[in-house]
Length: 292
Length: 295
Image (cartoon, rainbow over all chains, first blue to last red; front, top):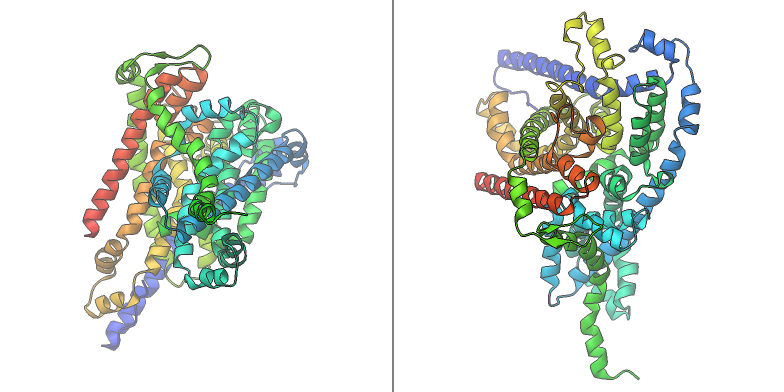
């Protein structure tokens, strides 16, 4: 909404100008409040993590008197956050690779060929877009246990992949359908089989979709808690959310600065990656909603 | 030497080769469990002893289970308040951020930050902030001289559900905001210019142009926020575990307890089927209503 200055009368113009300034000031005030509400908790977390316990109890809100880094040593060693981070990185990366492979190949098939059952298969993918995994957790648990995948990362990677596939296939398929058919046809006339046409023609063109799908799949798997809680019982295999929750339950009501430092260490990696790739993150995480 | 017939047959099968891997994973880990849930809900199954067919008994028990229906009521309250809060706040902030303002990108980046964090991290952060003795919230009230308003926010049945709802809105507003920003960018600028020439006030321009043209984006925001509200688990589990005195008990916490604490898989399956029915009805209703409005 960008009110344009009107050319009618000069008195009207100045009134409108004043109105515009007032509007801008009000906008800054409201946005400032919103920014404060979102950013202040992170500042408190950061300050708090650098305080000694006495300093925190004396002044919970302000900056630390003397920065105190022991809490980070504690978070690094006692809370096992680095181990959980590595576990989550492995699970999330494997989920991204598997999702990209399966979604891109399936979408190529659905987009390039007309075949019996193709529409039905696509529809059965799309129908799943609105069913949250929580709702079928019990039969899923039974299947995972029967396949001997409980306490096994495949027991997370495969369901996470299945969870990302409907949206990934929708996005890839829409993207492939919009590309000119001559591209693949030309490659085929040059003697490429479909596999070569897919790898050498379609995949390089699909780079923006690969980025989008990677981001929402990675963030989803990185943050997932419920399936990990149900399927993973070995504390050494805990992913980051699972390990953080278990640590928090055992430590509760004790030393706040140590907990703050633990939280900072555990959200650190994803925050840094987000700040580096912010535009891609916003596009990737809202892709389903904006295009759907 | 491959015969011609064999080659033609192989060519016919090729598309299935492309879609088969994805179909297999999706079938085993999504379609199959959804299909099995209906069957499971008719059994007395604990995962150890052989399951027994008991007809609709699980459903009868769900119907008479007051805890479950109170949990559903909490889900409905949760859905109404979070949807209203998220949509109103994100729409307001999106309209403001759609102007040429200093620091607009930085502002958007910060508002979106909670979206990339897990519910567990955010739940832990806010549980610490809501703490009665050492929490930031009560410390702020102290500084402001409002000691009388200090609360055991998560420990009291009056405030716990509201506190969790607040955190949910806090986490997701940035997400809905970015969706609305995409919507605002799709509205042609000349509509506003024409309205301005006709002497429409800022409020009229917002109400007559912005809101109707954002309709599809509102629909998707409402749908996503409602789906989240009916399947909410992580935040509640981390912050209150459904307490105090079941004040924040929601359907998924009840399902989790019955299935994974008491090993009543069939019974919890019946609850899930009821929940699935509710979610499906709600999705269809939201899509119907919004479609009718757009036409």
